[in-house]
Image 1 (spheres, chains in turn purple, yellow):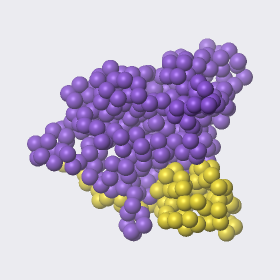
Image 2: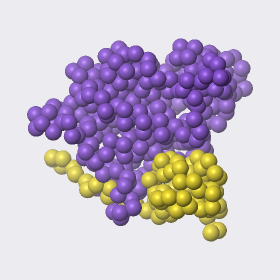
Image 3: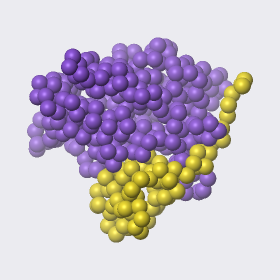
Image 4: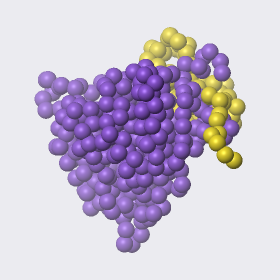
Amino acid sequence: MTAETSKHLFGSGHTACAGCGQAIAARLVVDVTGKNTIIANNTGCLEVFSTKYPESAWGVPWIHSLFENAAAVASGVEAALKYLGTKDKITVISQAGDGGTADIGLQALSGMWERGHDILSVCYDNEAYMNTGIQRSGLTPFDTNTSTTPIGSQSAGNPRPKKPMPEIAVAHGLVYVATASVGYPRDIENKVKKAVSIKGPKYIQIHVPCPLGWRHDPQITYDIGKLAVETGLYPLIEYEYGKLTGVRKLSKIKPVEEYLKFQGRFKHILSSPEQIKQIQAIADSNIERYGLKVESVSAPQDKEAGPL
Amino acid sequence: MFGPIISKAITTRANKTGSWRVDSKPKFLQKDCIACKMCVLICPEACVTGEGKNTYICDYEFCKGCGNCAAICPKKDIIMVKEETQ
């Protein structure tokens, strides 16, 4: 390890696909929390590509036990640190993919939140079980072509909308809940910084494009992440103590086709205006619900910044 | 096998993933760089380094050639070139 590379706590040489959004987000999170961090990781792509035995990409203590119990393991780590009296100096993270958070790991996560552990939960949301071959998860969006919701004469892909994980987290009474996207790396840094500054259970859900599962060009991982936000399909929001306190406003909202057309998983609906209309309706309801649109051009509140 | 399996920190550097590149690699022109560090932030391989304007460079031993640094650069100071050329 040279001096130059030691700046990152998530090192080179991991075995993620080229253009992996999860690798970007994982490094951003751990670099912000710093070397005094302990991570518990659910099974998933991140666990597999970052810790190919006997190697590890992590520069901090990192533990993997099972698919469903990272939150329980993190709870134990946090309780032990409290007993030792060093909890104030050390950040504990429980992280997982979307399957490990919203489906398989939800009971352990719910327990951790309910017990009020001072832990940051991070969900890397790539919208399907990418590690095992792109099976549908609870966070897979409507009309997605996955291996368990294939398209055909009777099916236009996943029939269910995304599970509202941020709202489930808010309902647990978390001190801080936020969504972020790889399309806005500085925003991820700011939100993680803010989250670790608050004591109590926190949840951040990061949208991470997956070139393999979403079937897009690896070069546009960043652009895809940005387009999901700009079309209103992935609103960037923040809740503090149950109240919606931050929304990334959009001066120009793009039609959803702009986001869908680059991805193989949505290729089948591009020729079907009826399906696009339904997806546009999801975006419109997000825009209205969170007030994503800048009301007046003269006084934008949370103005869209440059290449963040 | 019983008991925990432990690996040393950042030992994945043994995998020289640069061999994964298929046809193109990024070229850091170092002309109009404004040191915004967006290439460092976006690189999935954590292999872009530099400090200050026109100093950023990537480690071709690890770069998988995904091209996100070229996509994010606001000054278009990073371009993708064919693997054989300099």
